Length: 143
View 1 (spheres, rainbow, N blue to C red):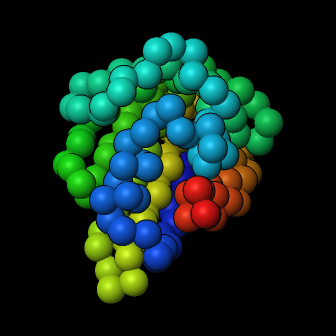
View 2: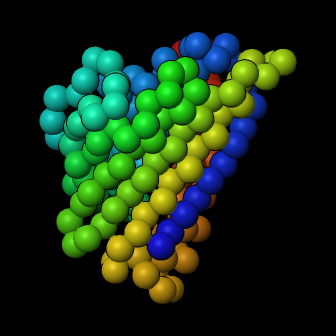
């Protein structure tokens, strides 16, 4: 298992942060693990929405079929992805109002035989840097 989590406070209204989090078409602008869409993406994400993308971790590309498991507008989005070789990915993105704007938390979990043992530790370390960069881009998008 490889897991990375990060939370940051940003000077962006929660409604704007939520809209950004739920805009699949805009993921290529901020989500560094996103390697591009391989299918049409829904204009609005609701429970059960699906799409297929490439996920890039440590330079390796994996095609992942995504399903929106939880959409608790305007606070929580949980996506579950299934890839080749038994790879499973869960992404949680939470938006919470704060005095300065929003708190955004991004959790990324990868499980499966391909990320077991020492490989999982290396992948987790790489994910931490990717999540940090993603949240930086998320914060500064459109500024």
